[in-house]
Image (tube, rainbow, N blue to C red; front, side, top):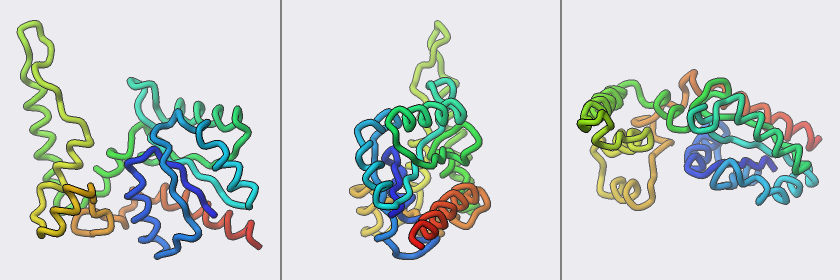
Length: 208
């Protein structure tokens, strides 16, 4: 089995993306949520169990940014040290593209349907407007919305059927398998696609 460890909110996207790439093949893939990059010690037995059974472990987390203690190189170094300390093995991919600082939401900004990318521009104008209001001492008067809010606003802006609205509001379904919203064929996803393909090849070879 290919066992993928994610932080949490990206699980829905990866489930849909795996089906997009290889169809319904759930017995080969399992996605486990860690609820944060510091929680690997809580799941070490899940790593070891899969390795002992001939499986492949993957970690797909955010690279984050230097200003919040992350950054692609720094986060990879931290995670590899955790793996070594726990005597477990896994291949690591960091959002957005395994090279640059960033996070899952930054990846999503790059894969929106180009026809509707204008919605992100509208939101950026809103962000600038909010940030432009300051107190007499120069501090920000309001809290600037984060990228999670931008992605939520992107999906919320579309007209939907009653059923779709319910899925979005109650189930937090972001319709990652719907090309109306997302372009899963974009070149920007190539690093992730290649990473997953490499894992698929490794797992297939180990089964021979």
